[in-house]
Length: 308
Image 1: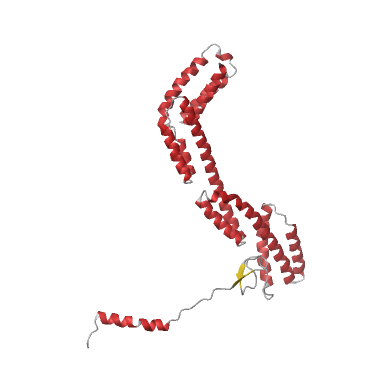
Image 2: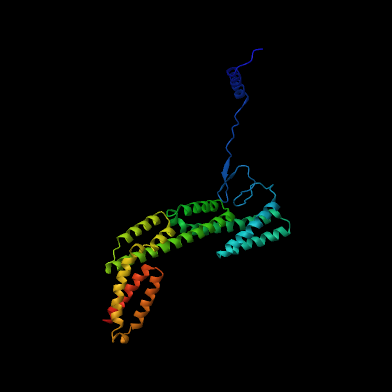
């Protein structure tokens, strides 16, 4: 008996490929036929018995009782949503009232017709309302990728009339937008304070080149939407020139001391205000809040000018 070598075995296996190919037929799936719902205009399956978006009935042989139970559950949650934003429910309530009358007579098709009208009216009003609310976030789409993704997801649910999932996504969008808006607002306020402090520092011949470089770094971070990080950087912007600020503050306080020790100082109208400002400046210095220290120097300087 002659043993087959490896090459021969492989050749035999490969020779079966043709038989495998001949025995297989590729299954071609026909694309599902879709058509437009005449009520809500969403695309629905050709063989659908009812619209999965607005629940309009296309086939009178549907299980009306099952659809009624479905719509009752959906209407309960939608009414809660509507009440939160104070949407008028007069027409919706009228349809629900009529539906109850027909249900009592066990006329389920007629009862369902009113429920469906109530549902359609309520969903459409909610969608229209939230389309307007969503437009408020359009400006932030280009400012932050996370907001763009949340907006896209929420808007897709809204287009599908999936109000349950939309409500969750919208809340997430709203909360995150508020957080980012808060961070952005804090950054802009801190930037304004630091840039004003740079102007004050220049009056007292405090070098600010290092501070300006730090501000540029913070601006670059803000351009990358890292507002919280930019705020932290700005909080330390004057640290590199703390010794220079201390020297300027020491000279300045000597002038203040000369003023408050004069015999005429006690009679000045803003004497107490100057002393209070000096006390506040000491607190800011102890806290290492150099921006506020510079602001207090300017404030005290202005008050001294009024004394003259």
